[in-house]
Image: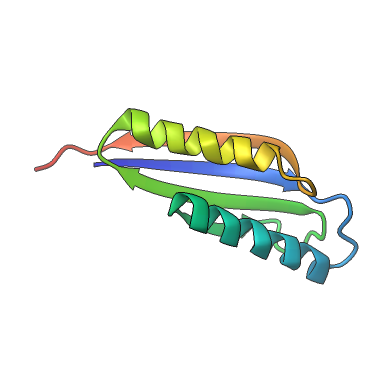
Length: 98
């Protein structure tokens, strides 16, 4: 089993309230869940009206497939029309069957 995780920081310059931010974050999370079948949550900067930190996880059988999925997710976030991609941190863990 291969577990991949991705932490992404985004900036929503046009967000003036937490309600604005939540609306954009909900849209991003729903779109990514539907497109990639992943687990995703807002994990940091919860009270910052413009900064978003998302934690994303996916599981697969092959390292290459998990890496490709995480790269596609990062590319989708870079292309988002409202949220500006700031940085990412990726981790892959390979667990052997016992």
